[in-house]
Length: 344
Ligand code: SF4
Image (tube, rainbow, N blue to C red; front, side, top):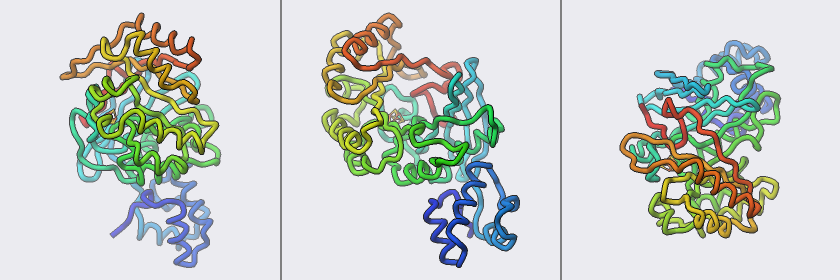
């Protein structure tokens, strides 16, 4: 049975080649064809011997999900509904901005964490995504937008903020990041990849040292009382556990500021007192707070905070010395914004 070559890490393919007497550097050449040029067959890999190309064709396939629906927002955001081999579906979002193009990838089909404000969590968990299912989300968007080798337009940022909790599928997620990161021209640098977690503190603590990218924490509350109400995971790993795990990351990545995501919910976590409490909580940390506005979905009773309160919240944090940009809503009209993704 053929194996998916995008499920292999660089070192696994090198080892595979070494076992067959093929020089290890051939693995790098293959990955350049796959990840920089978007090859979907081994035929066109011109710098490989014909016999090696044939052997690769016999042993491996190159995975792409099937695009079953595309929604385009008036703000340029594009949402892709992708079908996997077992017919499960996931969503991936392309977000163009003046200075950068970002792809938001999913790490699981569904999610078991159950954050109350999140449509994905509301629909439950089905399964983890394999490495090829994660990496190929980036590749299929590049296929569709014809971004291969484009000098003018490229994918500059990748965020693990789609469906699923990346740390509950961390081995496949880390393998994907390793594949997507490269110093090679046209690949995405480790500083431009962000893994966002709801705070699975025990896993974060273990992998913090070796996490090869930026870290974002879905904090969303300044204290355990509010956080447990909107994020049940807080009953397992509370704010202190999560911040302790963050300290471990900071120890090994002193130049990479952690971003704390804070979704403002009307009359839940958006008061001045909450802002001061958050300031106190993050004081002394190399932190940035991204303020997010809630995006509604059917069946959710939360309401977005008024823009006046959002600005007030941001001012309090900024005055206290914490950078707190208000993130623009993107793709809300096509249900592609934060917390709105589902499998349909
Ligand atoms: S916000 Fe993230 S971790 Fe929470 S339920 Fe949604 S997908 Fe899962």
